[in-house]
Image (cartoon, rainbow, N blue to C red; front, side, top):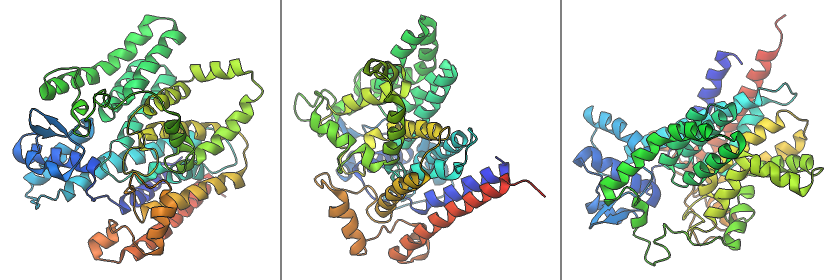
Length: 450
């Protein structure tokens, strides 16, 4: 692909992703925002005077801190410091921090992931559009919802995807380095580190491979040990253990107990937080994958899953998360704790489908359904869905559209005061035109010159 097309691809996707920038106060994002604000303004991670603004916090020796994985906060701190040094002053709401976090931890990771998907889709010669195959699965899922928020999931997903790519290439040090960064963004990645380390031992049949992988991950592990010691007094006690919502002995085990069937169903096929409902492209991919595997024996299928880095990582994380007391992820759109796995599986799906013949009509049908769901949430409630709403679309999202309760955090509304409903309509139009433009530009660049 030409550099001109890649620039156009990045520009269009940047505009789409930056159109909505989340500045709502949410327990998750506010916890990070308060930490960033106080480090820059007061020189401390403590936010005792503002702790009532969020439920997501750790209480250690009478002081309140963000219990979140540190990398997203650490990335935003220097940029916020620079802005304050340039004379920017705010009234304590932290909106500029939300925006910085949305761009650095949401938009930029999403754009890089999109480029990796485009590269994967264009690798194999086929009759289907690499633009549609790379863009639609991402936008037609809950992945897109978190693309412009100060959450940690997309950052963790990007680093995990890079780790997987280098793992497949055999660059084990780089694979370890990137999965370490993913762990610093999301603690649950520790499960995948252990799984991939074990698989390396079994596949390579040598300790050297494990040591190379571990050497790459070791800076992140050492960092978190020091980070824990500074705040909790022990390198092995994480801030998350002091989460103020943990009130029972069972919950003090970092919120984990034992796997539950209700959680497994809820995280996979339910309309509540089901991975295959909120990322329907994965159902399409799995249909073709199972159609290929159906000729194998159960023993052979089990062997393939156990040997697959993405397959065993998915199963392991799914089982671990199903034992978490808050497996649903609080106020959320889709199974946000599984977002990094969703990115990994979608990447695998794009690669696989780019090498085979598949039903274009079925692909478009599945992704259009996903787009309707994701765009409807984006222009209304985003991820702000109460935990007790078991069917978010009929209970929250569709009623919001009917009652014209649209998301005001779009650029046209924030900068020009345009009504949110008009901003929402223009966003949908912008998305459609952007996809058409990139599709036609890609086709045109491939046509031979006369």
